[in-house]
Length: 394
Image 1 (cartoon, helix red, strand yellow):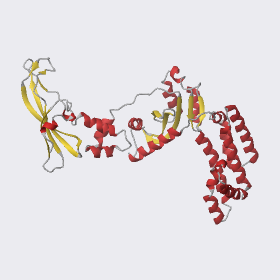
Image 2: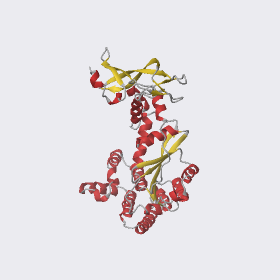
Image 3: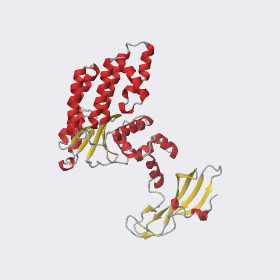
């Protein structure tokens, strides 16, 4: 058992007198009895100094666990009476604030746990309190609107909060930090949010990275006319990869079961860049391409598309993209018609990828973390709480 002369200097009991500190009879918890040292007090009503005590009251509170066991503290509170104005008041206690059921450090530690990837229910079980209490304490947190960085990444995620299916994620891809979470992806609401910033601050945004979303591009052109819009490289290449995969799936349907299964198992050879193929891979790839001239055309388009990002300047990249679109039209692979339409509309933004080493990688990773938080929390109905939880976590 801890001795009284050692417990006097515990940081948690700083400024109070510890009468005793002991283990409970069942040895499952610690018990402590504390009180304030006797001293003069100023009346909060008239400022008169008094030492007269009217009565005592006991308050039992629960503190954080100590050495793996719960700590139960009994506080002896004195009520003083002022001889000048005849009013009563309770002495101030540095251990616990007035009208509080827990010490301040209990609240701080509980709120600190909300900054980790876990649900409110898990935190409540660990601290031995109700879920509604944890939520009520967390709702006192509020994040103000952040400043706009020079480079913005924007994307959407399915949050189902506040009556909206999708929310919008604004991030700083350079510092790997979420700027803000917006309640929906509606273009009018996005414009309204950004217009709350004065033009001088919006003019500081020089680059905006996004997926191939025409909605985000239209908002960016209206609100940030001086910013360079950059298409995310991953999403651009994925359009080509999906077209190649759709071509393979269509062609292999005409094969017998053995060859079809071999095609499916060997699909990674089609997706892997040519310079990464080994000699054995090239032999297997040639067998696949010889099975279908149309598949060979699709694979050639995929390899030619990689050449765009090997150019040194945006002008050369734009010219290479123009040549690729002409080649795709000549080869006439049906699955690549979507690529031709998309890349024609996004030719400038795709060419802007050249020379940049920042992508939407961080924002995609943060969206994945948001999905994990949403799943372990069984969803969020309150958008404000959802936004604060995400900004606390990431």
